[in-house]
Image 1 (cartoon, helix red, strand yellow):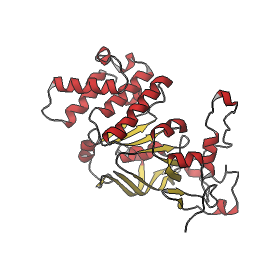
Image 2: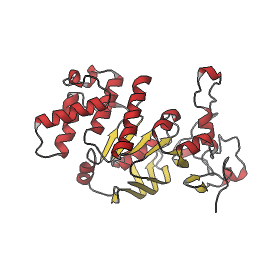
Image 3: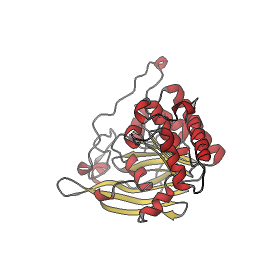
Image 4: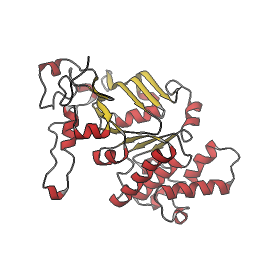
Length: 326
């Protein structure tokens, strides 16, 4: 359904230098599956998602190369009108900040209904209303008609997030990009929404990209996992395989930082150091400055992604699991 091949993106820094924000990203997402994307803030997860949907501001782009295709249709270098026809209809986007993504002067029903009017000609007001109510129900509103005329500022953060999810689902898109969709939602509703999104994949054959800092959430909804660090894809493969036996040291550190149950009396282990900015990336492996296993080779050369198992790749000279295949 979705193919990203050798995609790179450069922006201009304050000193005029080109900053490598994303470097040679290659991913494939099969129809009817979910790809989870994990990594610290600033790793490039949302930047990739915005480029897939054609929403990244062109004014700041200084260089872009590679390929992004949706079901064989190129998404890079196409005109705005083509992208507008795809967004909402074939690509649904769940933004992580609904208060800034939604129009404060429009009611929730009008904003969700606007998507239907934009992509379905000749539809009646009643039909639009039925679609809006169905979308709100699927997003967790038990009595959606009560919030029909509500404005974004009249809803709680969690309810606004649910309304944003409803807006993405209303046209039953082929690809759903969910950027931190459950951050502002309480635990009970989070479980409900994750189950609904998972059903969208299994029952209706939807394809999804699910971005989150929470590996537990990603584990619940995704089939495959891609781990990003500093604009690079450091590991990807089946979710369960990666989380049970991480191959890249960064993935292993992320798993160690995952909170455990209180009963286990095991505190999460913080990763020492900070994510470098794009203008201060190490010359070698991007994680070499924070990696406890780093050697001279890691600091001098940038590792390429190598296959360590079936359907699994890692960009590391000395992976923790598996043996790189040449």
